[in-house]
Image 1: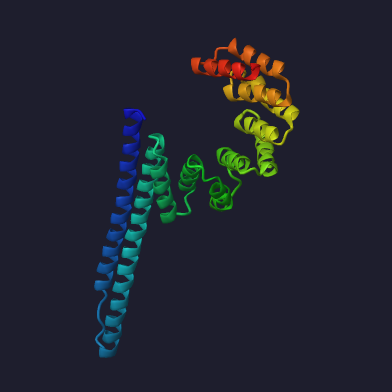
Image 2 (image 1 turned 30 degrees about the vertical axis):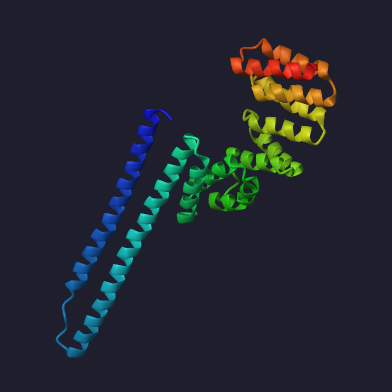
Length: 267
């Protein structure tokens, strides 16, 4: 992470804590005003009424104190959850998945009704290979979001279903994502891999081709298409896909990968 981006994240965290502290001070100020108002209640001349008023004041003081403590405690939890969340994001950006997971988990535990905290937690789980847990958390995320999961969250669940071998469930999600947004290419690539796993090589090839029709320099789609032909037993076509791709402006590392695959498929 660049110094500029890290500096921006730190400033965002400082701003958040500052505003939360202002909320706490506001609660305390209102509580002090309430105490002053209670103290200003005039005592009655009748002894019985004076005794009742004194007891009422005591209860009011206790209520105001309880509300002040609860308000400060509640805002304190908000601050703590946000600090854990932002620390988890920083850990993720610096390739510390275990720490990212622990921080995101703590944020969710403190404030389970905040969707970005859940998203950070599921991303950390995915990086750690906790696919069953990601799938299990899907309904909880939908409940928090009060709607269907967005594209990236749905894609992550579909990818986990694929890894777990639950291919039909994965396809239901990828098909829905493709219908909603054909420009969002990852679901089509994932669908190609799911179809290959099911032995549907022709359909897998069509999925990868649909990606390459939009973005001819998508490395994952090129490799997927070549592999689908290879698994089908069509080595010549697999080599042709890689040869055609090598003429396109792919990065050097991608070109090296294509060359290695041509050696593998040509054996």
